[in-house]
Length: 99
Image (cartoon, rainbow, N blue to C red; front, side, top):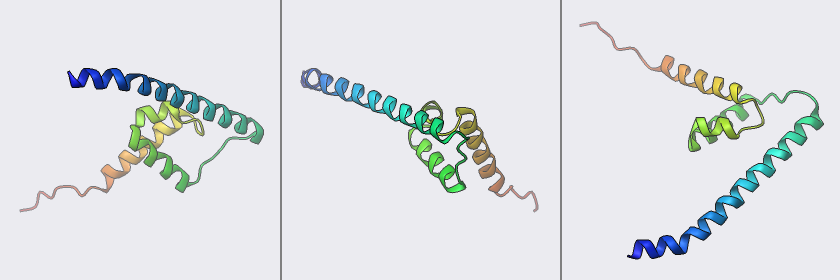
């Protein structure tokens, strides 16, 4: 009973926040596209900026981040994720089979 009441009370607030969040993301995407046109050349993030984007993407999930990120192409972002994963796998020590 309490759960139904809470859901009924909270649903409008959650829907409103979701709409606000979607509008804000769309606004930010439009700003980024305008800035990219103003610059007139490809944006090449530094290694530090790349690490920051990957860290933010890890928080929300890289698949979702690839859909949202507009500073670089989604294929570029996915390549960064693959390279990071391959690098982590290469950093792991191999099991030694020596007796």
